Length: 451
Ligand code: PHE
Image: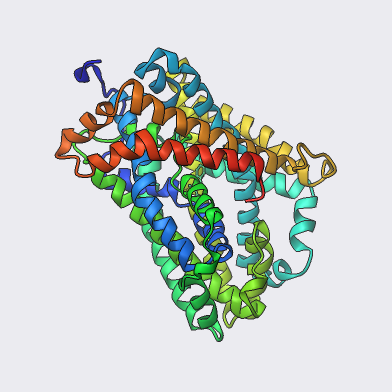
């Protein structure tokens, strides 16, 4: 395929910074703030950090560059980019399009929970949120979570409706700097509380006895999710990227942003939780950390109500910029296929997502006895999309780029703006290491789904 066959027809990001912040906004989300800290705590603290960092600059880098370059070179959404590259890979586009459609509704359900906690702290009812059973009572109720889901979806669609430049770029340029300042401020505060140093040591010092194969799998699984790769998002955002922006540099910046927020979230959460619960063993993994333990920790801290407000504003912003990217990916696919106006597509997508999200809401209330493969509905959606579909999309992408269109497809696009410095590393990653690691992660999550 001739390189000059590619086209750039859409209005995209007006600036390089806008692109980087929007992509970083997608990457920085609940995964950084809530999942990263407890995984780090569980898998040996410093050793997990080390493995994670190495994976980021090698494996994560290769996947991110690949998707951004595919997006910019084809100028298409994920629905058509793969088919455009090779007709036999149409199936990959179909799976990759389905992923954000599955994730978006339940991500918004969780976004709604965060909003509820924000409202609770802002109205100075943080003590209620810290009470036992508050979270289970809230989610067991059908109407309230549904209402928050609807509000959250409306907030997201409001931004997406305004378009890439006036909505997504503008809001990312405001929210991302606010987010980073707040993360630093809370982390610093959290380190000053009594007993924080034990937690800090636990978080940062490597415990080599905890190093295992599982540490590596957990780090790669987290990285994958955290960078928002393999769900079409970075292809879509790449298609809006300016031709004069350097893909390699932008990718590095996105990685630094994402990793810093994850690291700082650990500083913000682990020392405080360890100090509160009297030991690292007691850290509660899973949703309970954010919605059950942290409110208690805040209420036990001096000025905790204020910290709680700041924390839940932070989480709301991080979640919003991620759900915006998910919705934009869906909207871009529909826009390209059906050529209907953006406002209409956003309205339809929002309504459909509330309807699908309702299944997850009901899964915690009146349908709480109903499970699929032993999982509640929300967990089931999460498992299918993250553990099964994401690795398949990523492996398929590596095969397509590594062996079918060949890595030059990506390299030529990167080289439009100068030398591709890490090209050697890139080739080895895409052709051999990334698909092999991904296959291991995939098999592991099939047979050891507890991670
Ligand atoms: N990357 C986001 C995070 O770290 C998660 C995410 C998943 C965002 C799917 C968008 C889509 O939380």
